[in-house]
Image (cartoon, rainbow, N blue to C red; front, side, top):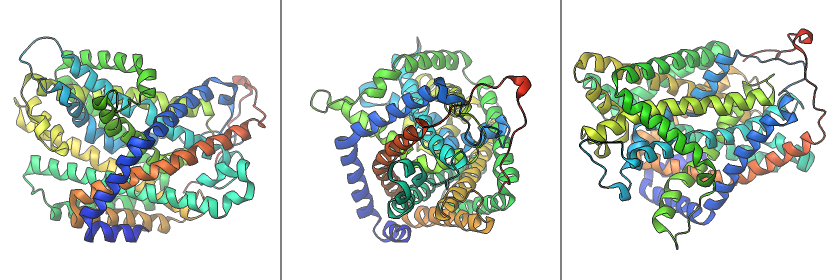
Length: 511
């Protein structure tokens, strides 16, 4: 199936793009309500599980303890969950919302922050904060529970065991796993392709290196080689170390941009947009306007929110399985707190600083960001911000390239682990050479589609990935049903006083 899609992406790029885009658009307009309601349900579920007695249940035996430190755990889940995306869209998405047709007259010379700017940032937070992580939590929590507490394979089919018994590991479960592999590989290839474009754009900006398919091929080959080395080093020495390093580098980048950027504007838009986002969380979460009563709002919702919910759901097998794999020994309450609220705080900071900077220069300095390609906008902001010291600006742009590159590596590494786990029947310690094979395969898929098919092939791939979100939304609802049935029979452990706690059991080995 993957090879067939690759061939079509190369020899029939335009027809494939038209077909996948048409399918995606039909799903968005006719079945978008399913994405809206299911995603909102997953958010409510995560909060309920955190606050209820079930929050005391560990993803493992009662005496198990976390395999990784809290910092390393958060670094891995964040860099895997949306690292490249935040860097790529941190400046771009608020600009898209700002220049939405109804805000066409957004440019101003001076004065208070236009309401459109606050709304643009709030809408970006809506797409990158609670909802995507709630989706990941629903799948990761279900799989972590069944894999580590009930000793079932780490595969989506295991969560269906309470509903259909052994048939979960027959052909129904195989179909679910195939969909998960499909969504993981193509979702990763799309994100890695976007990351490659941004790296190439940055190298062109800093060093004048041509922005073409040859350079992009070299970038993919080099980074795939680095990812291969990380794969062979194992989770502890590979993903964990790189994730922690990149988390600190990303925060360094954040601090530098904040210090040299329009601080008052960033603080104002960050706090105002965060308040607007939180205040509108429930109505926005349930909004699905009818094209008959408000065609403009309906078009925006299907183009943005419904697209994002489908995209995040298609990514859920990848991020959810990896999140479950690294969360052994944590309580459900710890799991939700760390995987829901901590990433949201980072998203608010990231969009507040980078998105706020982009909005400032677009509104008050006529930066022309709306007319640039998405991958070039962040570097244009660096130019304007460091116009007094171009060398320093190039250094910050280079740091941005390094951060994107490491996100690329950690995504490829964790993706190869997930695909290998799925293709090995849920084995949590697959052989490293098999993980290496999948790391090379992911790089090859990205290389073939980006170089031979171009941007249209990536768009077709992204549309196809979103389409897989529809069946997986239904599957994920059944997985949650299976979890609820299992929890109804669970003996919830009592709280243990600190003086009676022990080190507990840890996983037998790390891959």
